[in-house]
Amino acid sequence: MDFKLAKEIMQSAGYKATGQRKLVFEILERYNEEHLTPEEIHKYVKKENENIGIATVYRTLLLFDNLGIVQKLNIDDSGARYELVEELEGHHHHHLICSKCSGVEEVRVDLLDEVEKKIEESHGFKIENHELKFYGICKNCNEEGEICE
Image 1 (cartoon, rainbow, N blue to C red):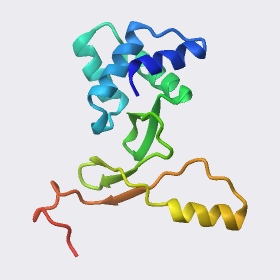
Image 2: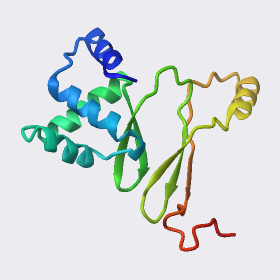
Image 3: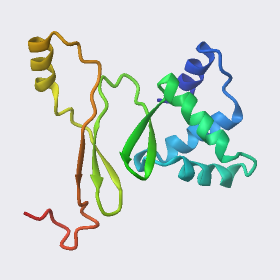
């Protein structure tokens, strides 16, 4: 998603695309692969505008989440992380979460297409979305650099 689309979404919902919101969006865009926490987003935002407080970042993320601009990821007990929603993405991608460093890596293959079809057929349940997380030890934290058996 680019800011032009995010701005249209905000305006159609009656919100202004303020400079502060644009800056939070740009930080999310720049560091999207890192799945930042609100505190990390604030750290980057403050480098560009020291007058933006953490409360503004939280309010902006709440608004973006409510409008479908970001996806809130509850990875572990360390709090929420955020990533921009991709345009035309039918389902969210999946995540690999390291138990040691809490790093997050994306898996861009939708692994549950067949499972969804079976559930919809057998239960008459229309699935709108799903989320799948795998927990383990990432390559960087694994001493040998290989997945242990």
